[in-house]
Length: 244
Image (tube, rainbow, N blue to C red; front, side):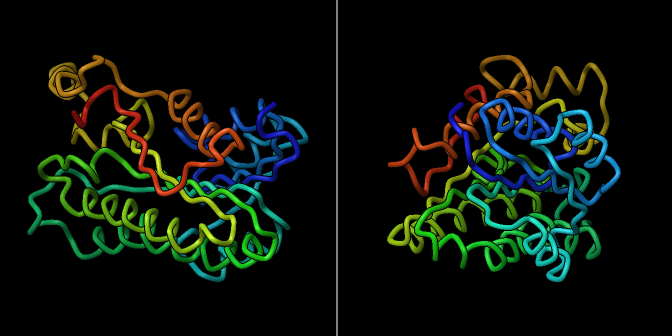
């Protein structure tokens, strides 16, 4: 029960890596707000997982929506910025402005908005853990996922600068960098889901498999627990060796 007594929020928590993190945090004793733009999916998952889970509809790119989530959730010990989107594999000059703006808003602006909503109370209490779900794309970019890559590189730098600024206040900030996994975003990363494309994608992962929500959940739980009390500003590669 490494998170017993902790209150956590996981954005994008209704599916994929986020749902895995939610379930792990609950198993380790936390109370978890499942925050997702799909409020119905968040509510359904909360109903399945029991009274320690609650649901909150949120648009992480909208300041008023993020503040409403903060107001409804009360004091939070752990914030997981997991919500993320990508554009389809496209030459960098052909990505539409609408797609760029969507990636910027969900992957980058959301980190600013949640920090503005939750950091002041964490600083006042002198404790807190923030985890940003970045990507191996921010460390070892794949062609044609250009602006997605850049957004995750931004998130890694944001993690480090948040960590160094907030360290004196007792607030830790870390990131995990997953390789692609069996989540709703996998097909978008690959462009299309065929056995041939899967085999090509897997050939770049030395351990030879996609990541799972459980892989991310285990890493997230450690970094957000008191076991990691001396770790801040790290971008942990959970990638089967992809970035070697």
